[in-house]
Length: 455
Image 1 (spheres, rainbow, N blue to C red):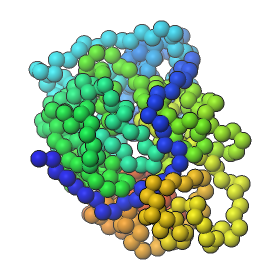
Image 2: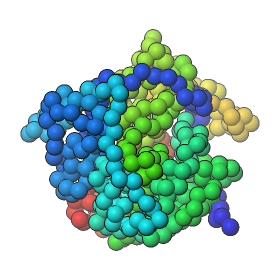
Image 3: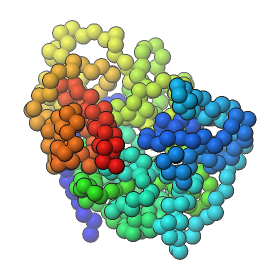
Image 4: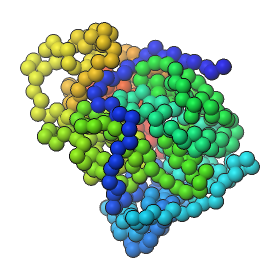
């Protein structure tokens, strides 16, 4: 019997520009770049030189704090530059890709008799350990610390998020291999979060998995919310989380013995001509899928990720390996509205009763809106109004936790649930925040401070 959890708190943000479930064609980059800053918390040591040739899956640098943790080339080709900044910090490693890709072959693992140590070593050497993140701190997992459980969410409820059922079609063997591997590593069935009502056979037929259904608005699809309701993280405990697309990459490595960092990325948003999906390999730039498919006559905000927890990029920026979505919306800097927020209107989304759209959405629940990137307010003192708790379905005192994080009080952070929180979990709180506080930045800084002080 599958456990079902109904979440009563949350908020779905209705934005125009959901991706159609088709795979678009896009030109591949000639130059691919590996950026160490994409992998938070590591110190890179480069092992390649300019002019050297590499295969897809060959190591280009490793983590100085854990020399077994390799980071590999996403494509085969020639190293054309090792770019460094101040104090010789490694900024990027540029590779001119071959027209015909050559993959480094790894020994295929027989999961029937594989051990946890062998599987961890294989993931470290293949450069795929970055896929495994941990709570607390929301960083790349420490391979020396065994997790009490491994969590995977099979759906995303963020605005315009990709449909993972569409992404995983025909890849059930890869997903099953990855699930079995992590059940061996953790010694327990992998915790799989399902969307209530989902009938996807790729997910529901998995073995070595324990299923929990979640019903409710965003952030029901956040793995942090699912962890909180299934088996919360306490002091001294560690759980691992893995994105579904990263599980597919790991599964392909286990089945075929190659590292293929290709993902299916959703191009979404009101300012996209044809929102759809594209196959994108790590190291390429955003321009490959944006070119010719976005409105150029107005100033645009390009977001790597969703509008709540993504970060701003430009067209020529290298996409992070964690990229599953790109959102394009109007910047809004040149927009001037008569009477501003006080003007009655039906075309602007709001969770408050400021506009009539909250009532209108109850009548027309599928109604969507055009958004822009304006904050629509200024930063001010925190108002203790309970507005965060209305949208975050976790039994923690969010406002008090944020105050403790601002003050840097680690003891209070521990007592108030900081071990469970990641920046994406408070993204919706940041959206509804009357005080316009940068909650995700506050949480990220506090978690980094906790990690440095406690480990």
